[in-house]
Image 1 (spheres, chains in turn blue, brown):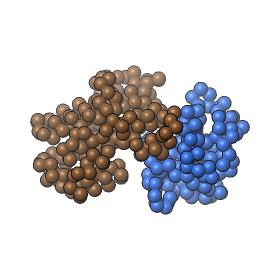
Image 2 (tube, helix red, strand yellow):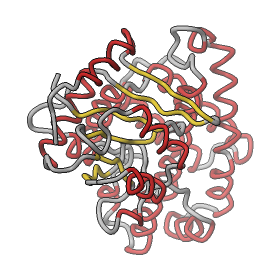
Image 3 (cartoon, rainbow over the protein chains, first blue to last red):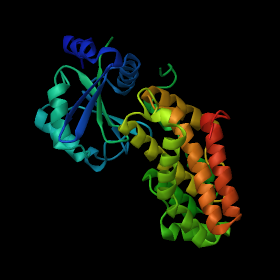
Image 4 (cartoon, rainbow over the protein chains, first blue to last red):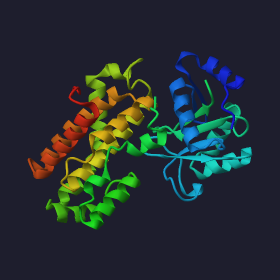
Length: 139
Length: 195
């Protein structure tokens, strides 16, 4: 999976300003894109440990068993599971099984450039229910 | 930043507010109940609390009453914080955004949950400094506003003790409740917490 800084990610970082964070909301649900350098580096280190082939890194409640049997959760206490998805439909289905609404999955597909395609993304739930996404790319 | 010896998953694994290993010498069914409840992030149920009361020698109604204090005590901590430390809730404050405040209250509920495990088992030391250091490192990485959390935990400790004492005066459970919250506060935030 590509780890170079993508021009689309560069654009997001410019848009995010000093906060290094973007929020998109729809129907009361929020997608947060976290672009803090420390944070991207943290996920990048984790991706290196877990394997470069995956294009999703998901903070799940359980480390073992089928992915459908667990839920997406907050990072603290989670098991980080690498996954590879090929299509938008597969992405939406996997996230839906993990307890993420189709609305939030759709927001992620709209606003996370390279998702499924050229850039790996880390996804987790904030404790208050926001879906948070961080691109895994070199800075 | 995660150092070279501690990748994120390793840090997550070490970061524990409740360490079941410290309870592994309990009777097997009690230990298993704690492990399962903690994995599911749930409170001990009635039957489990009654089992613990038999083991610890506490009146079962006191353990059951403790669990009922969670919701009102967290609510009280919220209003106390709002009145005593309004600066936390205005722009720039640790709990200024509703979602940050919501996350803080969820943390409080979780802290109370593990404190109840500790009281039920009569073991006020339910985690260790290494686990808490990893948790603090993770909190920093995740941008958790620990200033607000420290105040909230302090309030929760005082509120729950007062509420329990109003029901049962100075019982051994009261002392364990006090010690359990104190140990957690000390490990998480050192002696710097103002109430």
